[in-house]
Length: 186
Image (cartoon, rainbow, N blue to C red; front, side, top):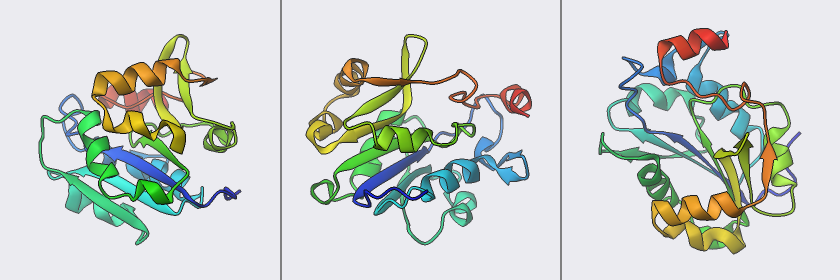
């Protein structure tokens, strides 16, 4: 079901270089699709006004075919960057004044539960994901919390820890860091 609130933005963080995986993990096949395709298609289904993918310069040409023409692509040129840096790069592609919220997701998390993003968007405010006591992406920030997006990584993490959360299963929010992680998801 498409989200009624079209003036949201989604950001897909896909700029890692997959050192532990050994190759571009986002192109690894899972259930007949590239890993990145699972995340991109799930976010496309939300009907967001703006879609931005932050991708690594090392792999951006290989990843481009997995994003429809509605995506803006932010290319991360620093292989040593952190997810925070990629988020900042993606935010530069957005006019934050024109959106009411931003949903941030990781491209290597293929098993988000059906309806999970929709729950986040309909929560009535900013919300993060939590496994046990640990805060993790995806997270959704409403406009009133955008100020923390321009702060340091530590300040953003502190803000995210204080937000309401949606509990999720470890399986649903599991990411892929090594080839073995991918095999464990099949």
